[in-house]
Image (cartoon, rainbow, N blue to C red):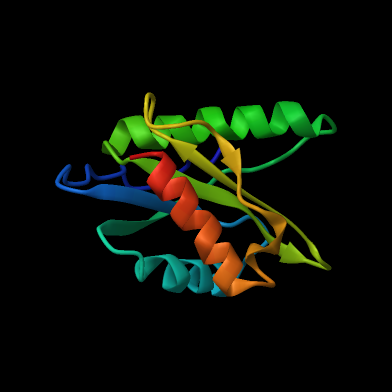
Length: 135
């Protein structure tokens, strides 16, 4: 787990939809996360909150790892009062995994479509659809 020597997560104001953006696995310099944040900051009514946490997808059973990742992301939502978390892995050799975990009662866990990184307009549209579906 990603719990060693980190500052506690801070509560976010509840006046609008707040989206936590976790560090992306495999994105050592943070470039892909900054790209992601730039893309979603333009969405109206949305507070983007980068957090110094990473949700690791480890093990042989990918489905179990994703479920465990959503569980960890829900803990971040509970600790902060945020509306949702985006987390996952940075693109590497065409493979990436990006996930959306909303607060309980605000929609369902989803995988962000694979074309997000290659098609910024379509990818942003997918995020808007997730955002709108979670309102």
